Length: 198
Image (tube, rainbow, N blue to C red; front, side, top):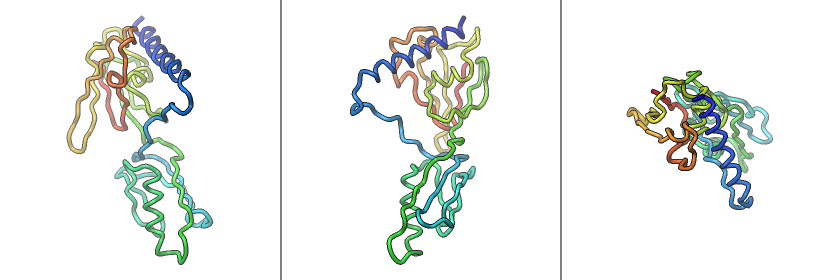
């Protein structure tokens, strides 16, 4: 029964968001947060007109990758556009004229991972390929078990060497009442987060 309530709450949240989005004109719609690169992501780097510098690279666990003529590049936490500017600047001494256009795209966002542990049906580590919020993360993990304390969900987030504890207010939503659900109550999950369902 609790599982059905969780699925219904997530569906209701998605439907209400779709209804709000449908009422907005295309000019007022906002894209989600810009994707920042994570260790484990697969990137495609293209230097137009120079096939020798077109390749697919995987970001190492330390957040960097090597690229010819540019050396070791720190990519973790950067936007693709940031890397384009960095690689262009690094290649500038190699060209007499203008540096060819550099394009960096995320081919496979496999570095965006989070874990859900505790009293959920399918605990584990997940790579959804898109940003999800705390309520969606619980849904991906199968929803709470019968004896879960849905009012005490905690998100553990690394902040440098420190550990941050977030307490999203999901109890009502997981019981079927999404009337007060907001982005503050169901924050976006960041890569490396661990959501704990006691």
